[in-house]
Image 1 (cartoon, rainbow over the protein chains, first blue to last red):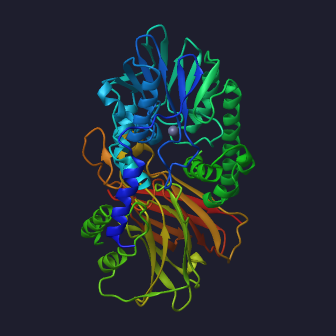
Image 2 (cartoon, rainbow over the protein chains, first blue to last red):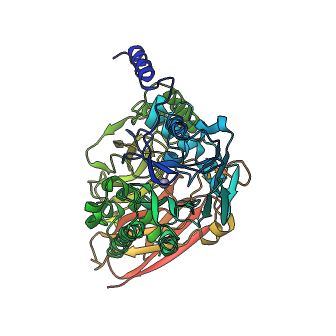
Length: 306
Length: 266
Ligand SMILES: [Zn+2]
C-alpha cells in the first residue's frame, strides 16, 4: 500500500472511530453513589486501546469526584459523558491514584469543569520525570487515538491524608510511601466504606511493579487494616473479598521473591529466571507471561545486591 | 571515539523517522550504514556466523536488556577475535562497550545488560589482531532506556559507586574456562538524563574501563559506554591454571579507580 493511500485510510478509520459526540462509558454502581468503569485486561504495549484500568466517580450532594481518568482524552470524555447521564452536579475533583499512563491521560477531558486536580505530593515530580517517554510511547501504541491527551499535574497534592467534602459524604485520601510507584494514593469513601486502591491492589491481572516492591509488601498489612467493606482495585473486578485479594497479591510477590533469590544464589541468569520464576502462579493471573517477565527484569538486578 | 557527531546524526535520523506516519516502529536497518561509517569509516566488515548475539525479541525493560555475545572461535586461535564492539544502532550514544579478549578467557563469551532507547538493531563487530572485521546483528524491540529524568541523591550515589561483587561458579576447574559474574554498583549516568533539581542535564558519570587480571596476568579488559546499564553486569569466562587471585580494577570517566580482589581456591 502506498503511504498516501495508507494516510487516507487512516484518516477515514479515525473519522469513523471518533464521533463528534463521545459515547458514554458503561459504568456500574458498586455502592450508593459510587460508579466504576472496568477496563479490559490488555497489556500496556502495542495493541493497547487506552481503556484497561478501573476508573470512575463518586457523587455527593454538592458535586462529583472523578477517580482516575483513563488512558486517553477520548476515554476521559466518555467517562465525563457517563457522569453527565447520572448527574448534572459540578465535577469538583479529578483525583489520580498514581502516575501510570492508563490512569491519567484522560485528565484533559475535565478541563472545562475547572476541577481541582488531586494527587500524591510526589505525583507532579513523577509526571515531569516520565512526560517525554510516556508521550512518545503512548503515541506509538495508540496513534491518532491518543490525540489531544495531555499530562495534567495535580493542583492540590496530598502529603499524609486529605479529606474532600462532596456534600453529605467525605472522601479520605491517603498518600503512601513508595510501593506500586513512588506516588500512590488511595481514596476511601467513608459513606459506603468503599476503598479505591489504585494499583496498590490488582485483581485477576498480574500485579505490575515499578516503585519499591519490598516496601509494598511491608505496607500490605496496613492496607488490609483500612476500614473498608469493599475495594475497587486498580485493575480487575471490584470485590468485597478485598482482603483475600491482597493475600493473593502478597502470595505472588513472595513466591516471585523467593524464586529470584534462589535463582541468584544458584547463579541462574536473569534471562533464565524470566522463564521460570513464579511459574506456579501463572494459572492465577491474566497477562502473566508479559507482566511477570517485566517484574523479573526490574527485581532481579536489585536483588543481586542483597 | 566519534560518539559526539554520531549522536547527532543518529538523532536526526530518529527524528525524521518518528515524524513518519508509521504507527508501530520497528528496528530500522537504515541506521547501520551511518553508524558503521562513524565507527569504521571506509572499512569492509564481513558478516560472520561465528559471532553470535542472543537477546529478547522484545525487551521487557529498555533500562536493562540482557544480551549475550559469543565468539565460536577459540581466543588462542591464530585468527582469534581480539576485540568486539557492541553497538546499539538507534541509541543516542550507540556504543555500549568494547570487549578485549585474551587466551586467558578460555572462551570468548560475554553476557551483559544494555540500555535501549527504542527499537533497534544491535551490532557486534569483532576485530582480529590484523584488523579484519566481522559482524553479526540482532533486532530488538525496546523503549526508553537512555533519557528521562533522574532524581537520585547525588551524595548517596557517589558513596556507593564503584562497589563490586564477584561470583565465581563452583567447583573451579583448573585449566578450563570457568564462568564468573562481575557486578559494579554505578549509576552510569548517560549525560542525556534531565536533572529535576537544576532543570538541566545530569552530566555523564560512568565506569569507563574494567581491567581483569589473574595472578597478575591480564585476562580481559572492557571499555564501557553509557549504553551499558546502570550497575554494570558482566558474565565472562576466565581460565585459571592454578589457585590464585583475580584482581579487578574499574575506572570511571572522572579518573577515579575502584579495585576488588577475589581469591580462587582449589
Ligand atoms: Zn499502575
